[in-house]
Amino acid sequence: MDKISLKHLRASLGLTQKQLAEDAKMSEKAVNDIELGKSRPRLITAYAIVDALNVKLKKAGREEVTVESLDWNPL
Image (cartoon, rainbow, N blue to C red; front, side, top):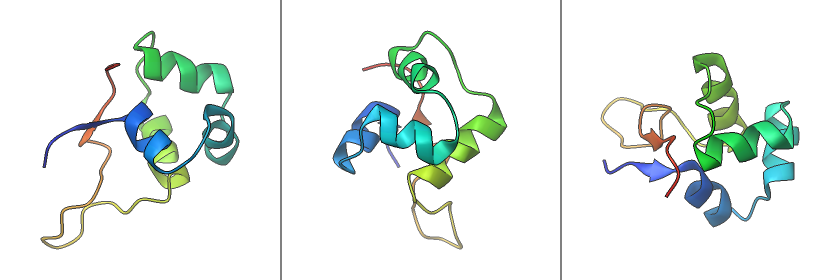
């Protein structure tokens, strides 16, 4: 599976940075910094983001969006 940027995935789901931040229980600035490549999320934060995006983790042979498949670098 090709990597997808957090910004692209978030936008394709119709979410703002503010909405993602609220759902992931983090600051909007933290989401912005991650999307701009100013910071990289800790693993627990990455899982919170994936959970907030309401995407599934890999399951038995199905290709889904995972923490590992997200490109945490800016476009």
